[in-house]
Image 1: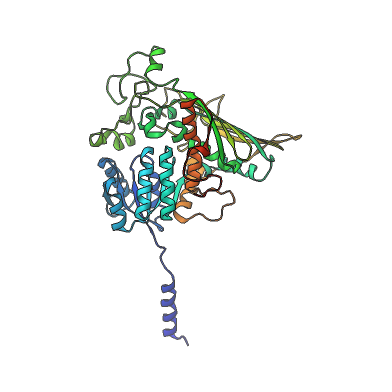
Image 2 (image 1 turned 135 degrees about the horizontal axis):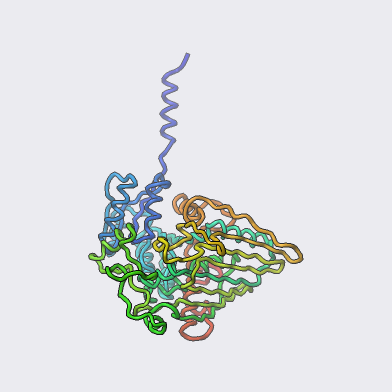
Length: 468
């Protein structure tokens, strides 16, 4: 005989103890191109643990663009919006627990500090900030509030980069003695930094900070060491008005999205790309921001050729170079150790041909493309060779999504909390400081023609210990 009352009681008890996971209340500030990844994650795979409460931007048109995307993703109603100047009051009056910052680099420190002091944790796109003052302010705010800052270094999660990390961490090549790292940006991706807000160093810190902070973080993480001294050389040698005049390029238009210009491989006509047109071109009337400035006009203050020597506290030396006008895109890194050598070569776009329609695939690492090139082929290869032994190739297993599946792994750590990771991929604000410290020191070295010790920058924290 079944005791109905008892069965019902057990069912009610089970229902009571089965709780719906609490969703983190999130506000996102900065509705440019980088924000889409987070919005799709919140309304997709991580909808059970994250709730987007509001969007904020100086441009109401771009906010509207993502309101439309939210509707497409199944949002039943628009999320709230607020002016960037109302960040503190919105956080405190709406119970915001986390702020995602995807604004231009020079604004990062302001929004990070304000969000922390208002009581929210922060997720910020790299770079953490662009100068010494920003580092100090963030360091002080973290110490004062006890809140958390995560810098999204998605390159750590890319399978090819984790494969190299495993080789080094497992001691296959012994103790690391030196690293040679060469990164080339092609005339699509590289050129794009010279037509947007990045072109002015006061906005981005230059490519040493905006772009190379990714690369410096990889080295710091690969070898588990802390940068100590930086010497830099470089300049603006390809893009810009002066270089165009020296090469006889003639008069240049101020922007690419105009009629009657004819063919020009460096021209970006945003009307040719539905997303760029809707997100930027159609919304210029709100703030006057031009996404398509010509790369050979005046006003560019960042470098397109850079080389650094970086000494590490543990002894290794990094030789690093960056070129932003290469005919192909990718990177080569060699790590030398006391017991051998590891070599990683990556081709992300084998060629830029003006006859193709790939110009708006700005970053081929995030949006892979298929190409047919008989000489240089898209792909990646990690080769290890120990002393007195033959070389062998280490397999690299990619997943689905951007950066070989790395973006999905990063988003999982962000929204679900990082689990136990023997590779130490989740990154905090100290990692962000360590990466931008190389670029900040590099910029100072460019100005002085002298090596710069990172400990003398006065960042407000001892990077070797991670303590204030």
